[in-house]
Image (cartoon, rainbow, N blue to C red; front, side, top):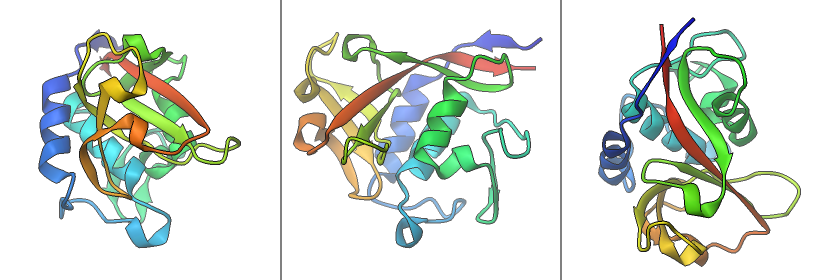
Length: 169
């Protein structure tokens, strides 16, 4: 069984600020083939966790543009992996309320109300605990942003993922 260790929120946020308006050459830029937001969120979470899960199909990993888990770049797959019940290696998150989110957590937005479309990373809180979307500042790719107030997005649904730690062998 793996042990749960702290998630390095500061490292995740530092990475988000560094690459919000650029692209880390170690990772492919998916902007022109569906969007880069969850790839960017995964990079930030990896900066804060330092571990990937190389389970074929159901893990969370990136080796190269053509060898990655669906959870690395897919909004819904990312959510399913991070909030999994199994005690497998990798970052661990729970679905949370806005008042529970912290720096380095991930928000997911639905622009149409039926599917999840965007995965920005929390990089600032104007009020802690946050009580409304205007209190939350995010960084993202696909509409590159840094310190963007969450309430400036036009979305139909929202969910928050709060990281509780990282499982390591």
